[in-house]
Length: 65
Image (cartoon, rainbow, N blue to C red; front, side, top):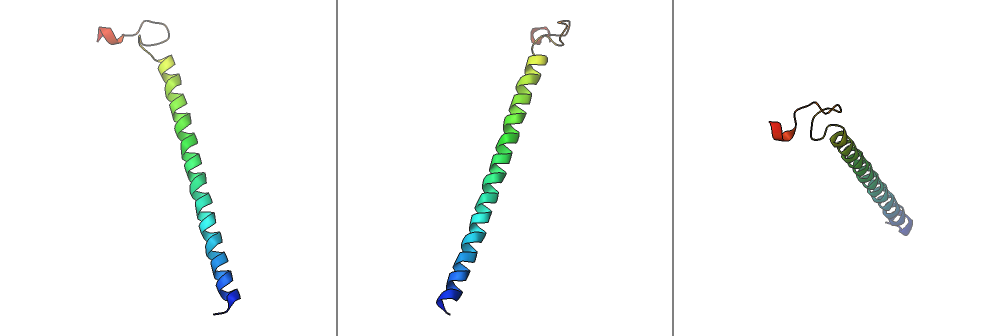
């Protein structure tokens, strides 16, 4: 096989691997941002529906169960 034949195959393999690595990084970044958003939503719901029930304070608290 000629030099140029090997070179183009190596270049193609390199580009394929690089694209796959970029896809994996983007997937990880996307998943991490979703986890951060879910954690933030969890903290908000704890603030709204924390101990004592609803916002009016008339709900059943954890100690009353």
